[in-house]
Image (tube, rainbow, N blue to C red):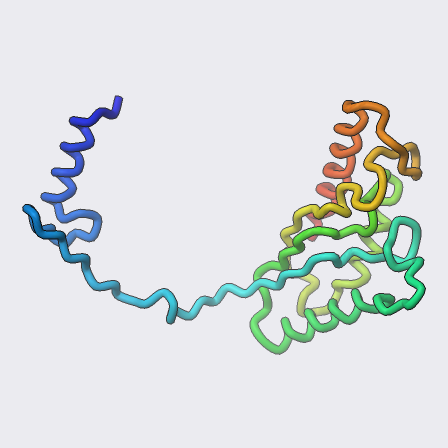
Length: 187
């Protein structure tokens, strides 16, 4: 068990050995002088490149935000963003990953197993297929719309319904997590 005496002994030994830097430390009332860093982290060049994207999973049919958009401003936005991502990856460093930070399947996630593959094919595979990004791995988290967003979490077949009890609520959440986690490893 760690006690006061053990800590004091360890601190004394560390001081005699030179601390964590290996430079002998001065004992007594004067403070030890830290060694000068070999580099400035703020000026270092890093070679990590990632893209970040959220609210990307629109489709033009049931369960989607854009099928009823009266102005259709967002009708082609997903294709435009995917094209820009592909162009940027071709013009500069190809990203090591694409971080999808939620709302991957508008408006209310994947609601039943029967729609999982078609939603994924329509809102991901058919969109982010440019030569420069199609093999980049995606790291995704679920957003509020993926959990249920604008509607109920529980479903009966392909219809969203109110949950009757806590057990149904948990099962609805479990289904959404399961169905999305089964497809997201593909990315």
